[in-house]
Length: 324
Image (cartoon, rainbow, N blue to C red):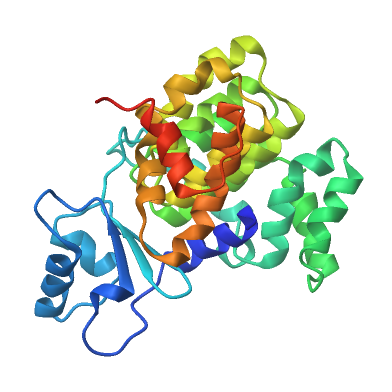
């Protein structure tokens, strides 16, 4: 299953409500991060008592401020756990001039088009230029409007104000998520150096923007793989990033680490503190969750230098790194 499909699931999750009319059934949801002593049935019973649906707007006020809902084929996956270490967020508002520049440069209706999404993913390949990679990404979406796609790609390669630093600073401020989404697009247009990529790593843990940041960083590092010294600098953020409650981001990061052949000397760091979400995925009971499990098996196979294809084998390997 491709990251592109997983990203689509993430976009769907942002506004999803439960499909069924009437009471929610425990078999229709899977819930990760429940408090000790609370079962899925308890949680569903409370939703039904309140006559609520399975969506973030109703779950977050119940005492789960970082709850996320992901729509899969047959269930709603609800993650309740908060970030292990939130990315920087300031209470102050972003600079009004910077917000004005972002709003003038990027339109929300543009950012959510298929043409812009493909252009965003192919940006780094286009810059190299890696025409075969660009063609491969373009072939995955044959119905795109070519003129709109080329216009989006051109805009992403023609940086204007704000600067990269101003765009990243905006991600930290308590401003509207629509503005912060535009800041990611601006950061993409300015991203050129390893030090800049490192500044974006904390935002893998951003509940709203983590998927877009993951796409951006995977594209950058494909052509600028970390050096030995860079692996050492970014490893703490990668370990924390792996434990983001969002399984789409966590599995995307695992896939990237495999692609980059992260030095196996970091296996213990990645599979101790970085194992929380991996364990949630592997312990998942519903068949729909195989989409995430299949993303983990190559990562664990690479680190272990053995072939891991089942939940049992994956859990046995991860168990070697867990406190007893």
